[in-house]
Length: 124
Image (tube, rainbow, N blue to C red; front, side):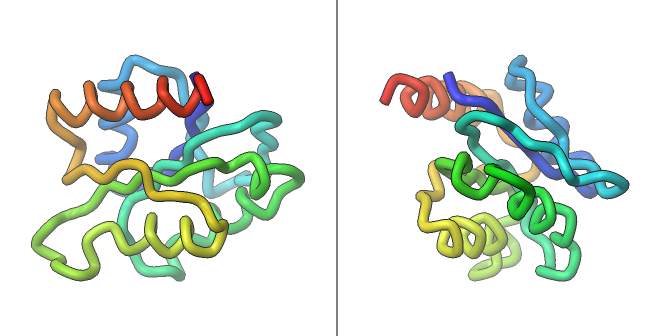
């Protein structure tokens, strides 16, 4: 299984990760400069680009950009085309796939499906 790095502003993404029962590194606004050191999936909420500065700093730190193999996004479907735009934008910039999207903090089925995605990525 690959590692998980995530960013949470309102706590929805953190709540989703906690439901996974997997350990994940939470990107910290005060000090986003943490090297993952191995392949990981990045999970981000959908917010304006200017609210993602810590994620950008994290990705630009040492080997993080090259070790990010996929992105997942949490959002609100009421935002229509902006639903999970942050995950899609980051994935495009890194040339990696968006492997999962969930609404708010995810359903139990989302948790189950995401765990399968992460497990499958780890076996490639």
